[in-house]
Length: 322
Image (cartoon, rainbow, N blue to C red):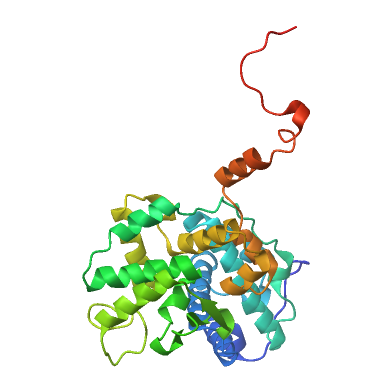
């Protein structure tokens, strides 16, 4: 096929012409780089979706003529089937995948280079109010599940952990004297996250109910098995709905957002928050720390520059027009 949009592949044998083999090679490469299991799972899911798209729309993977149009079509397909956020992640996955093929000499050029990254709407970050958190905690009874869920909710609120980070906590990761958790974040980067007295009491009560189990993971099911991210999401969603909170805010990340906003409201700085959240750069922290519209209105009422001028400050009562 002629044309400037065609990316030619070097003929290096059957494996170079097989999408499944290329994907497996890429995943093996990522595993050798010691990427997190969650990243590997997500790459596998998005590349499987790409393979399905190619099979449905192009009959076979056209490794001899990989075009940016195919990439654009897949990204649009992902947006229609899932969401703009998923399409954005799929774009990132394909960029990593084709960069690997170029690096290994299977492609001369990365077709994603000529595809614009899809834009996604930056929604206002949702948070819980202190009253809503109290309502969520009030749904936790004094049985094992209630005590465990209370400890989970308070840890999420007080430490701002990701789902995978909380599920990965082990008993030995708790430093009771310093009141800190040793957290393994993205890229297997470790960080120390402090927790307060309320979390200390909640964890102590929960571990007392948990007892001595072979499982070393901190949070377990009623059968003594470690809980995974899917189970954790279900726990949070059920507690939120029981408290009368509906919609997209019924999520684990809402606790992470709430932690960030409450931390800033209390007077903390963004650099400290960046370390606690485990972000590699401050730009990501700013995204998590965007305040809601209500916060902006309240801050403006408190610090309105014009209202703080004596000569034009707020007045009460009616005045006759002159």
